Length: 263
Image (cartoon, rainbow, N blue to C red; front, side, top):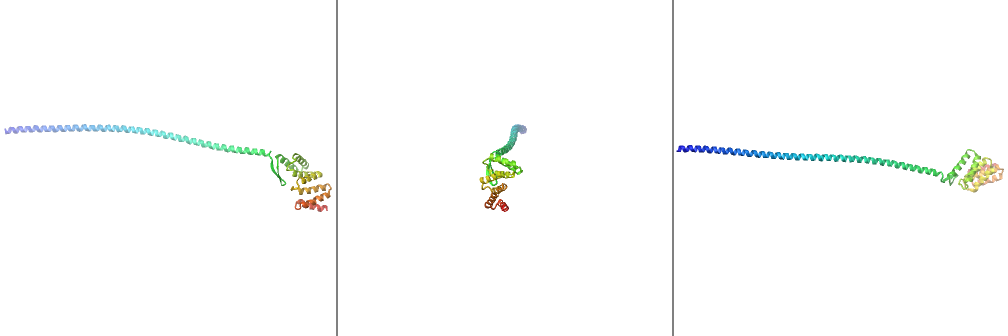
């Protein structure tokens, strides 16, 4: 009995051991199965997250590219606007410079026109003249005619000069040149031996302008006319008056010499 019990116990022990081993193997297999499933889930989850990340990165890159393209376009537009603005500014500066040149030309033309008008008007407007120390206002035509008569006199054409001075005095009876014209008329008449006419012209000058600077010289000319007309007494009286009234003049010195000869 004891031997049978021991044999049965041995079988039971072996069966129990086998069962335990089977349970252990089954547990290990189940545990391994569960570990692989979790790993797969983890891998799938990781892949999904990576896919989502890649998708998000792709979208962000796409947006960044679009933004960059838009920014580049904006910069190009801005550059074009700046270039246009520079071109417009250069054009405006060119227009300003042209306008400045046009304005300068207009001002110069206006100045030239004014000067031209003034020049033309000066031919018709009276001007202040100084002759033989006397200042007066004369018309351009008046000055022209007097100067023309003087030009003929200086050429020695005394007959023509005489006629021109007579015409001048008739044409301009109130001229400021009158005293000077009478003086040169008298000299032209004296040169053509018109002593009576010359004497009349010289005396008219002294009567008209007794303070004229040519009066001493005119008195000497009167004495010369009187001498040519054989009026020695009248000539001596004229010369003595000249020396007495204008002692410091050149005419008075010449009068003294003439008086010395007459005595």
